Image (cartoon, rainbow, N blue to C red):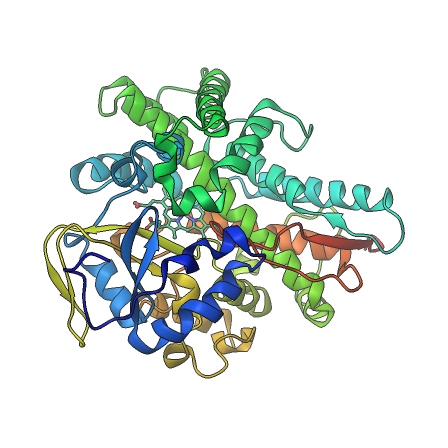
Length: 472
Ligand code: HEM
């Protein structure tokens, strides 16, 4: 690491960042074996990622300090950090990665559209119903004992729901498994999240054939997305207050440039479906592995008829469902690590005075903060929903308190907290309840589940068996 990096925290050897590439360890195993022993003691470590050395923080007190001082730890996304990379072309300059006045202009336009209270919950339920129907149908075609590969179905659900809920667009991903946006995006993702390029993005400076193809895919994806959304929303009324209409008005009145509109549309599509997708994958894994949990969740809901609408208020008040989701997001945060802040001045972090020079990338491991034994107790790595409290009210209060303290940060916190948290939680609640009301879930016998080696955190290639329940 550079000579001006802090001396009082350890350095994780560079090869640890490459383990996901040349071993079959998943990122939870890599964290537990190679990062935790140092970071748990010192609260932060020096860590190689994204082609540079960074300061990676775990201890919640340090993390909340970073989140609070946004002027010192300024957002600096891929477009600034690795502008030449395929990843930067994919995500562009957007509401998640921008800083200062540019970010404010993005957030001012988008916040009212994303934090509405009147989303189409019936639409989410309809999609969740289709998702479960597709998975049950796939199960019927499999030999006894085999399970359905759930990720492709969940991805289609997450894209469709995002499209209808916030972009006013029917991507048709639940009616066909090969709509263009789904196909291009799947091909692109296979390229983008290769661990080697996440760790060493400077390789994108070289004329590597697969990366050049990935760049072409990025353009195809952007054009397909923009064209589909604009076509489907062209007749929306002038004063419409859905997110997409607010974004189109910002483009038309010059608040945003054409590229800013495109980049923010892309990031809404990406962040709006992928994180939910990975979160739901993990939910199905944990449910399938714990039949008793399914029984208690099922007992919490009663449905007067198979088509009865799900009552969202009832779901929020449900302690078993709430604690299940919070505990899932704690142990398996879909965004497990982020290194996208850069110091605007030299600074000192925490009581042990970690001296950080100007222009240093700082980030955190949510995996680590969520499993920090000083913050969560000796059983921090154990799935124990009861830790959230007794009533749903108490659980929500704990969530807010623990987010403010930096110990529960799946949606991060402070001014830059996720704008889609409300929608995401509703999607997860509805999808979980729909799955349980229609089926019993189990893992294939002897299945060993591994998580992703890098990037978003989720079980890889998860197969779940669905046993259809009698309609009540
Ligand atoms: C389980 C699902 C989700 C998770 C775990 C999640 C997580 C996060 C995290 C960790 C951040 C902070 C990123 C950073 O600091 O660099 C973030 C920001 C953001 N998320 Fe989400 N997200 C989820 C769903 C969604 C959805 C469904 C949408 C939109 C429909 C969304 C829109 C956003 C936006 C716009 C921001 C930027 C906020 C800002 O900086 O002003 N997210 N999300």
